[in-house]
Length: 52
Image 1 (cartoon, rainbow, N blue to C red):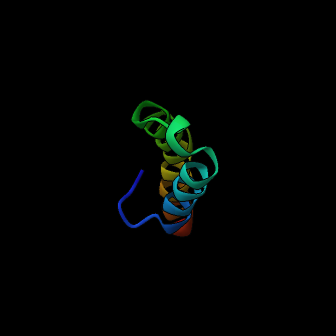
Image 2 (cartoon, one colour):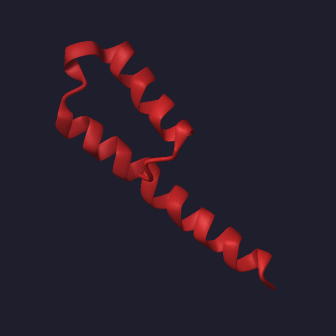
């Protein structure tokens, strides 16, 4: 997940607030990857499409 990703950060914060201590660092990393990888791919493709 990109450092400037406010939506991803808000998602992780909401999950942490909802699940509390059950939201372990391992789960946080898994969610960051599950959200961040597709988001980064869409951002990259959007940039490519904008140059066409």
